[in-house]
Image 1 (cartoon, rainbow, N blue to C red):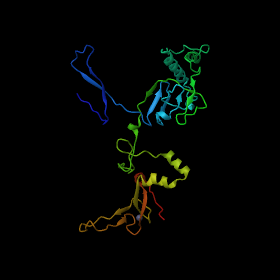
Image 2: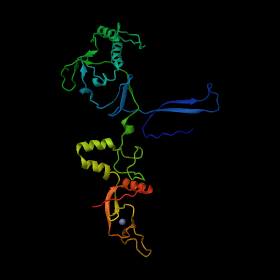
Image 3: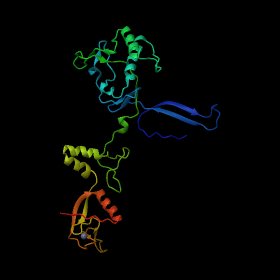
Image 4: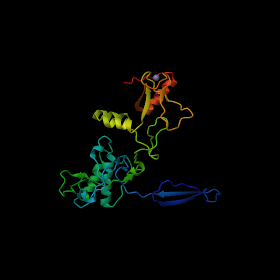
Length: 299
Ligand SMILES: [Zn+2]
């Protein structure tokens, strides 16, 4: 038997199954262990109703700040009504009313599709049921602000909806980096959360900074914090590849200053230091491999 558990999180063994053939007499057996990791919902975790209405928990309110109904009930989740017109998940509103009426009368509803029609609508059916339970026909209720205690001006649609937790949680996804691994070829920071990589600052992000005119930040992200390097360039021939550190004669000590010499011009007084992105040097080398010369005009 062998298994691996990569996570350091505390977990509960949910089930252990010994798997074999149908009768359980097989020689080969496999043991399946299901682990359950209990986690509290945090900001950034993903949830969804059964209607594909997924969303991210964006704020955790203290229970006392939540709005409450006349009976003192506070909702678990508040969502923005703007999520409904474009997605057309009417089913969630119907489920809300159905859940509320079911909870009121202590019954479960049959959710077979196409049982309601234009003539006898679900709204009518559940509305009447809610009215019979002493609630508003449309499933709305008067709510009071948890912060001020004042009555909210609009009636709020409130009900019971089944919610699921989706397996995208910030604790699995958050990423930070100061300095760390760099790519061997480009010398740019590598990507990837498990290797402490950076987060890509792409073209659209670049455009956003350009639009704001924040050139210092742009330069900092794309150059200084990325693959900034200092290259030796020959001012005379403009070559980035020809300046080489002169080979020390065998009798030289390693402490002695070695000069950079342009191998094309054969002199060292025409060498200048320029800071360029490291990928640019790679780019120049690749162009050279295609027989294309890159000449830098240094001023
Ligand atoms: Zn040169």
